[in-house]
Amino acid sequence: MPFTIHIESGKIREYANAVGATDNRYRSEDSPVPPTFLVTARNLWASPADLSYFRELGFDFARLLHGEEEYVFFGRPPRAGDSLEVTTYIADRWEREGRRGGIMRFAAVVSEFRDGNGDLVAEQRSTLIEAES
Image (tube, rainbow, N blue to C red; front, side, top):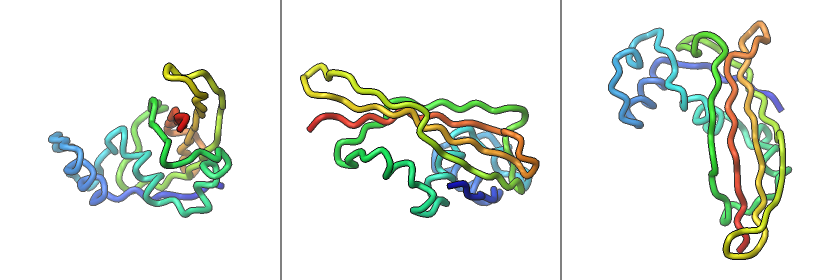
């Protein structure tokens, strides 16, 4: 289910402070976003209904691991003042035998960030892993 995020300079500044980014460009009124800001914005601003992809996976939070994350930007990074529509979906699922036995389940999750014209501005890919208990 798509939802919209409105990027604010104050939130960019707070995020830059939280991750220890010292570049002054993250402290101006028209700041670009730090690359990893987008997933944080998605996770903090999404409603539970917007995160329905996670329920669809059926992964147990207690056994969840974060495997990998990648960001691709198509043109300039989003900036303060931009509004982006976010759509997240499961791109792939697979299983494999764990080193200590048991089955590990994997999922590749993609979030697309589109501008007001519907153009793809950025894409974020995560690999989630559910370890066997």
